[in-house]
Image (cartoon, rainbow, N blue to C red; front, top):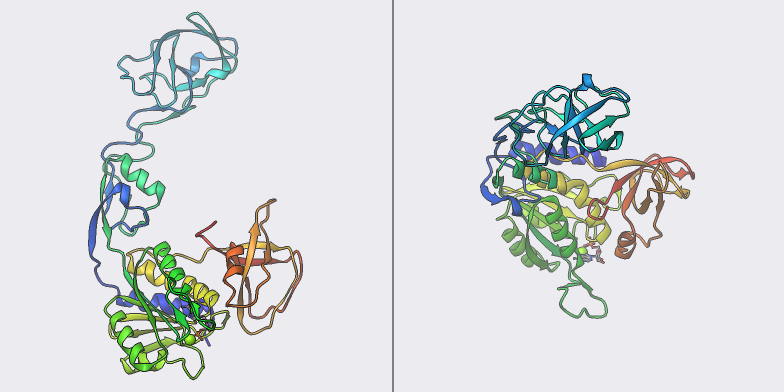
Length: 403
Ligand code: AMP
Ligand code: MG
């Protein structure tokens, strides 16, 4: 059985192998959050475009400033002002943050280190050449590529594009991810379940996870645990690049997903992973569609999506596969888990001191959605660890959607 790292690598290798050119769309910068850039963005001028003051204070010749020195203030420069005149000797210019430093001046002295009396400015300490000035072109040169194809557009990347006037951005089309839940017991969320039925919460979490990962969910509803219904709905899913199924991949008599996929020509790259929850997770290719069969217990579905489906969506979005957001945390409560499988336990991490502290959330197993809604991470307990003591360091997998 593959470890979760091996299973992830299997997904990444197979999706990379199959990756072709992607459709693109031109998006306005206001609407491009979460998309992946499909073009290079270059600067339209140098950045900063002028020698920029980073402080409110006085632009000076550094060599003229010493403790007790006084200089005559001859002008004032606000951000946005045109600066035409060089700084003359034995004088200074009052300058604001973001304003252009006049030619000749090589330092800005913070206003806090000066005393003003009429036109006369007195300095209380020496100045170093270059202080509080960002030189023209030091952030980027004219025509320099500042964003490249494959860049994920977050708020900083969008601001950078906006800064250089790139208001329309060519982005990769989001991969369409079909979502199909399975199970005779599952009813649509707007229906009243019978006593022994449950609402289709998995389609809701999967659609949310698809969106967060950068994909476009295509909702196919639920298939009954019958070959004909599964076949018909899976065939519909095979029209998309990726099909994610929930349920029907365990060893039960009515777990028919693998059988139906096989009948439709699927080959499987793995059909179990050494993790709990989520062990029966399946990954393969059916016709030209990547297929993930995720176990139906809601927490299993969520964990296996994060581990295995997210990297596929990353790659199909035109971006590199992101690493898992694993960080070390200090255990605030002891643990006792069965060996053999890597456990992903719903847990809560808090940043009270320098080291994050984590505690698993009490739960009733992989059907317990309420526990995961109390959690902000998964505590990752390696397969060879059974007893883990308070104070030990353990990796946690962050729930990036809420942290
Ligand atoms: P399965 O993997 O098909 O054996 O499903 C395991 C359990 O997960 C079922 O017994 C249900 O309790 C639950 N489950 C399956 N599908 C869903 C779904 N779409 N939404 C919520 N829970 C589900
Ligand atoms: Mg089922």
